[in-house]
Amino acid sequence: MRNKHTPVFLNEAVDALEIQNEGRYIDATYGEGGHSQEIIARGGRLLAIDADRNQVKKSIDSINVVQGNFADIQQIAESHSFTPVSGVLFDFGLSMGQIREGGKGFSFERRDDPLDMRLKETGMTVAEYLQSTDPETLTYELMKYSEDIYSPKIARKIIQMRSSEPIEKVQDLITIIDSVIKADMNTQKKSYARIFQALRIIVNDEMNNIKKGLQGALNITKKNGKIVIITFHSLEDRIVKSFARNGELGEESVIHVEKNRRLAPFERSAVLRVLTIK
View 1: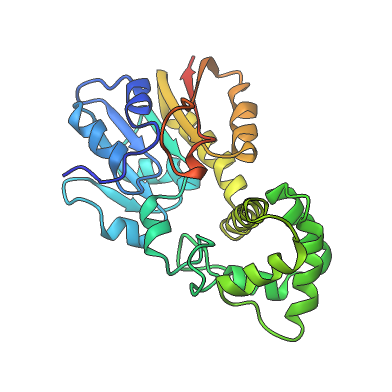
View 2 (view 1 turned 60 degrees about the vertical axis):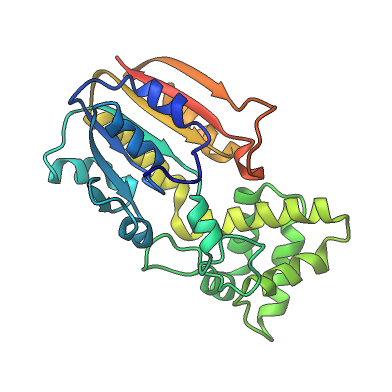
């Protein structure tokens, strides 16, 4: 059964893998399984990976989904005797299920959710990060990963407020952001999205994991194989563009979202890059 939500680059991404019958492919970011189902439908053999235990639990029985971090793609593939591969797909967006179902604080619309944002069950939550991180680090990381002009003021307000009251729920953080930004709702929502993005990146160490995952994919993909990557913001895309200059990679093609498509706000900035192994 197909998922109700169609990934932003479903056909384009799977087309780019150039599926060969019985070829080995890795969906490094399973999510709700849309890409994985399409790879299998076109005759590919599949290994799928997802860090979120809930996503793995919901996976279709016929698809082999491993709970793990795509940073460890090489070790996961080797431990499942699934190398070399003909192609690897990375989709760095959150699944719609993670946003809709809540419980982790990924969406600023779900005000009663706890500020967790971990994709796995271990490590520091966002609430713990906001409560314990030293002021200099908090300010620097919010600036770096949100690229929001209000982030230094938001960091200062967090530091001021946490001494009297813990920042534990989405609403707590929204209240702090609102107290800093005196602007129209559209401007406020853009800052919400950037700050929440930054905190998710930080607690999941996403940028380092992307670098490790891309290198691991390169190590296990055979000559003329494809690494297909979908990014959703400039921080991710910079890492991918830098990686694309690797001497072991040849041709790169790039696809942007068509302007007239009806998409969720975070999907409109999606970019698909296709890298070919020399």
